[in-house]
Length: 89
View 1 (cartoon, rainbow, N blue to C red):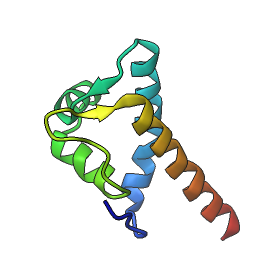
View 2: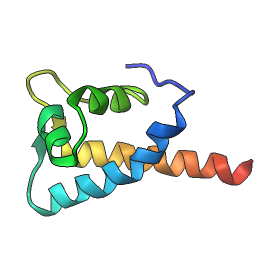
View 3: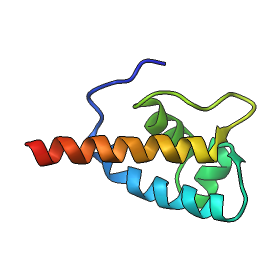
């Protein structure tokens, strides 16, 4: 899926929360999670989770869910990229 350059500030602000939550899942040995299960655990909606993640490239598979380590790695990359842009500006 193609990346979008204009990610809303509300999504950017949620990225660290996603990152920390995914780390806790990894620490507990969870390697795959659906958007519904992630949403239930985080107090969000599955639709919001999918929308947020699709804003910077899709990596979930319908019927499979998200690979937790891969998703955390990609979100970490987004956090780093956004931080670098803020520093330059």
